[in-house]
Amino acid sequence: MSDLTKTAITPPTHTAPPARFSHGVRKGNILQVAGQVGFLPAVEGQPPTPAGPTLREQVLQTLANVRSVLEAGGATFEDVVMVRVYLTDTAHFAEFNALYDDFFAELEQPPAARTTVYVGLPAGLLVEIDALAVLG
Amino acid sequence: MSDLTKTAITPPTHTAPPARFSHGVRKGNILQVAGQVGFLPAVEGQPPTPAGPTLREQVLQTLANVRSVLEAGGATFEDVVMVRVYLTDTAHFAEFNALYDDFFAELEQPPAARTTVYVGLPAGLLVEIDALAVLG
Amino acid sequence: MSDLTKTAITPPTHTAPPARFSHGVRKGNILQVAGQVGFLPAVEGQPPTPAGPTLREQVLQTLANVRSVLEAGGATFEDVVMVRVYLTDTAHFAEFNALYDDFFAELEQPPAARTTVYVGLPAGLLVEIDALAVLG
Image (cartoon, rainbow over all chains, first blue to last red):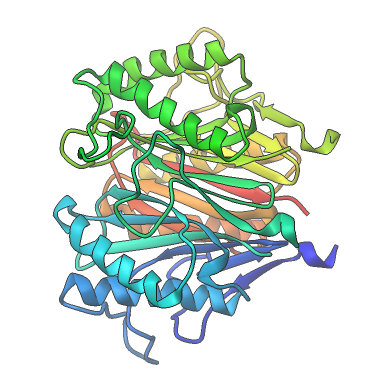
């Protein structure tokens, strides 16, 4: 069926992925956003550069990148059922939560479920976020 | 469509989440349980307190909390297709698996898929579990 | 409805799981592959043995194991919307990506979304991968 075609999503702000995967994929009413980090909008000929150096800047850029993928796939944060947050340091949890609350307060959206885990990330990256949306 | 309304789930045993997200979300036939930890049932005016101090107590409380969210959303473990387990120590794996087996033996449920990863968690927490259910 | 029966998937190449869960579960058009590691095909009476000792061997075996579960559940990598990769060392990222690209180039499949996180794994294991598929 045509509505079960799998479509790869690449927002105009994003560079091509560094391997054979997509920033997001939609199939039927499921939209999966790949792990997003705090890279600034892509500039032709330059390597990906994270926002920063503060946690605040990286978190807001990361959330903006998740939103870009959702929107390029025809969804909004309203459609998201799960947000997975990867932090590198448990000491970032309180500040992250405050930034997250502010971001979603602006959007007036109902909350999604969330899991926060503490992992390693490539050097210079403080946060990664992926999301699962179910479109209505 | 009314059956694609997104509904946040907060079981009566749970405190309000520490940030703008929910303990679980249902949309259509998808129910996502947020990362649950081993907090005892909420007591008005007291901070969340993990069961313990043993791994056994935390694991059983965590599984009970996952079940509370499922049930508050109209689902059971029978509907779960994926369980993600986050442990802090690979040395906990064998004991965790024995507890997990016992728990699901009681429920007579067919198994769900599972991933176990070893990550950091906030101080005092030994295990976190999230789950994805597809309702029939 | 019959098409919403939950079915556990165990490919013939796999050992019985070490706890009460399945290598994969299908319910409706959702197929969830549990975390796969680089164990060689099961041999009766022998403990699970990882391919190795190189990263290349473990990665290719892990991807083959994910494919075995997908195929045993009636799906292919074409149906996968999310691949989660767990590496133990950020220094493995570049080689992993090259192997991943080669693997999917052979399959001529469109990309799925992906998240790569750096975590601990049991001794001897370098990579774990799980996947979510939506069947068409």
